[in-house]
Length: 99
Image (cartoon, rainbow, N blue to C red; front, side):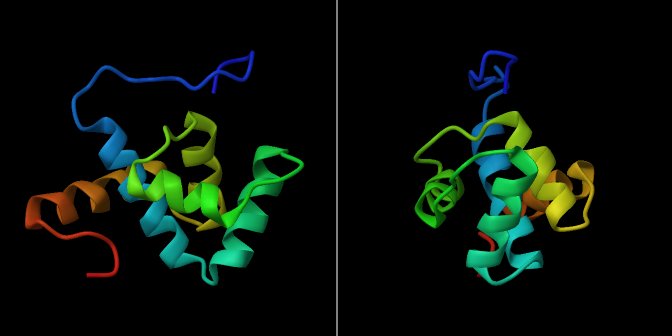
């Protein structure tokens, strides 16, 4: 997320899908969803963050702020590199988190 609160978009094809999958993996490493969304909201310094917003990120229906990926890694006690590597591996296998 930029300093003015805008979403940073990366021009690499598939990055939105990869980041969405990484968020889904992080959520599964830190269940339940209610707690994950709460801890993510606190890490991001937001007044609110609904579970529906997190689900929208996971489904690729909304762009994931870069800061959300950083926060998800912290909340799930996993590095960003590990989350993205797992996301790539699942994609190569044609799977989604939970499959």
